[in-house]
Image (cartoon, rainbow, N blue to C red; front, side):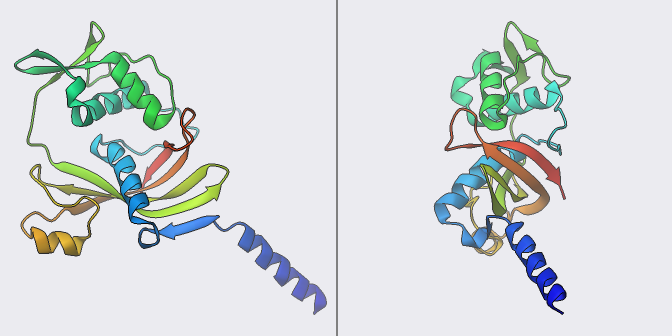
Length: 208
């Protein structure tokens, strides 16, 4: 009986020590932390990053496509106006985006989707695409600068003007004709940025 009791106690201790160091649902996070994480993960959602897992080397195309799309969406002030039909995205801007969000230094080259000419990725000017964003659903502090969790991906019309940090109830109340749809869920791992301890970089991103 004593051996059995010892086994149970030891098993419970092991279980407790293997729990996440600070697991939190979305509701348990502060508004400021939710907003920060939503914005961080929206960068990957809007750039349409596909699933990848830690220790699997990402192809250059994934990095380049992310960097180009990120600049097109978020850094319009830094785009080069090539002509009436095309924008130019600077090579160094693509490389900087990859380092900022993935922690990898790359020498950007043409991808299958985006071709580079004279250090510019030339991209057609377009509009009217669906609006995509993310919300953190779970956030687990694993310790040692590692976090895991789940992000929900939402898609709305290109004209969506609601609160991207809001709830479905809020969206239905404010604009019932344009309620964002849940279009994906991703499990993630992030670590501290190699250049900024106050930021994270994405390590893996796996669709559920």
